[in-house]
Image (cartoon, rainbow, N blue to C red):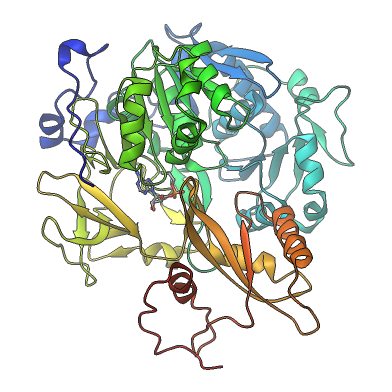
Length: 583
Ligand code: PRX
């Protein structure tokens, strides 16, 4: 079905004038150096994300402006001004410095969305550490893989989460310190042998700190992301990424001084840091953080209670709101909302059309990746929305559609979505895997791994991924990671994992499992393997469905043919099976 373009609101009906009022004009002679001037920088030309996001405001007119409005799972509330954040992050920076943490050390976080996560992460940036936030729903395996690969020296966590991963902690030779934040617990911090109490360390720490002299090229943050083969890789970003996070906060999220902004993503994934920390705070904007998970009524209530004006969420969440029905939003006053954005998966036109009467506006889709560090393609308030399209490249970005030889295709043709390298928030390496990083660049382009097409007006349309990576509810899941966990179960001989289409989550993880001799398929065994995987990985990553099969299709070189499993699952033609190993 073809959806008509949704015309941009007439200027006089807009509540505020868009920051990017004339896309074509700004794009025309754009230079990133002009944005450099809008940041504050440290004396001597140094750049640090924590300075741009916190200290810059704390030393100026935003000192007493609210930076963070936090609501916990059980309804408790806390607020922090930029001035308070400066003091708290300075304290944590002193804590780390006292432990001997220096520039380049990896400091990781396995925490819920609590204020201490934000404080500790920016404190670590102030010392020049490379920070790594981990999704709090992970089980022990993904946490171990990431801490081991990054060689993290410090882990900041909370009592319940620490308990969940207790068995892996002694297996990490480089992990020197575990700091436990006693949030949400009654009574004293239940510290294990050798753990340090966040509260005790912070109460002794000074609130003055000189930010480390980090250059724009120094590493600041890493996020693990899944590929087709092997375990997830750490995409490493530099302090200069903040230049683009700041700019896209203005252009794409259209942040204005008086906005109340809510990004629903968890900082364990890149959207939760680039747009749940860096973009709003580098713009000096007040943001809301909700620790609780998804519930339609709770989410509408957040918007109403905090009078959220700009909202950044994901297609799965919007589809879950749709599923909850049209009656629920009628009980809430959502009139504060003036601008809504979505990312992470294709935003289906039906979701935009559903949202029109509910939110009284179009939801604006945009596109980017962990590797890109910030939005590269987006819909803007002063541009018509073509439902189903990701929009147009931000100023300063050249996007292309390439054939299999990495040459450009004309408009209308489908091919590899590629970007000309050199944007400020571009990742700089995969941690310890420069070869894989290099393989992402061909003929002067960064190859995104997505397929797309561009229409005659320059709008980009997402088609699909070129690899086996699964996108479930906006989270990328590497099949290899899931298969590795499954085969650790004593009854499992082999496992092949695919993404199965799902109306809400876009895809869910489905595993095909063959059993070792002496084990028979049964409902009980299926549930047991499912529980096993969930406990090791995370509910979001573990298979939602398991099908027992006598054997898995493999290439002659022994690689599981996931493509074939998927084709069979969907009842599609099996394609080229010439490399298939015969049983
Ligand atoms: O396949 C694309 C999909 O999500 C991938 C990036 O995921 P990740 O690295 O986890 O980054 C999440 C932060 C955006 C992309 O390669 N994707 C992202 N945005 C869209 C999308 N697919 C379709 N439409 C989008 N707007």
